[in-house]
Image 1 (cartoon, rainbow, N blue to C red):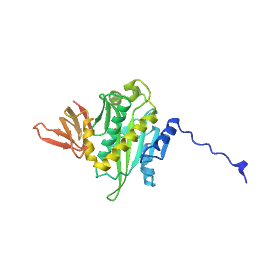
Image 2: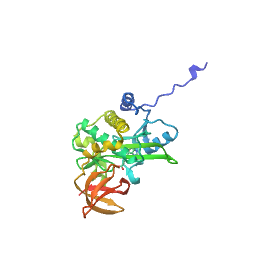
Image 3: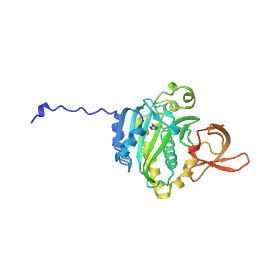
Length: 277
Ligand code: BTN
């Protein structure tokens, strides 16, 4: 026996909020973890994707304190300083109907509902994938589907939420357009509580989607969209289009009213930017 020579391996110290969150995930039905935490990572989306390809379970959660190359929709960079919630989840939804975007909308709804529960007022969904507080962006959501042939292997849902991170350090457009829970409320939040609420709300919506068909949940999404009935500017292929948002279609597309009164549905993938006129 060489017990005396055996070095004890020091466990990697995880922040307390991660330890708490890990325990709380046991209360959930399918987003139970494992929970992987990284101090610094390129992107939690990439880590989640690697884990999923290696057979990672549905409900695996990946969180990072900081991302070097957090990514947003349309290959945009997502600024991810410490203090925010940068999280990806591996999903294999049974209710998936070839519409990855519906997952994004359900996740947006779960973020908005979490903000209500955290007493943040004026939270709304800005189609296609943002959550605003007032007029400023607090969260961005991305859903990336991976296929093998025509078979869906998994979806990586990424949620980036400015929680306690300092927005005053953002530059340019981000400084103008971004906010955080801290900025909106004037106090700090427990990241484990914020993450847990979002995951629990999202899981509840997934359960409903499985029973009812996700399309039936879109009325809840529509009710929380700040843009319906408003004049908006859509940027499509680099050109600004002034129009009016009239509805959310059963496919999760944005229905707009053309100048001649005709209604047209816009796909999320075609929109570079949306803002209220
Ligand atoms: C967007 O607004 O276009 C979506 C932003 C999504 C950011 C999150 S942060 C956690 C996850 N990891 C990433 O690299 N991106 C998502």
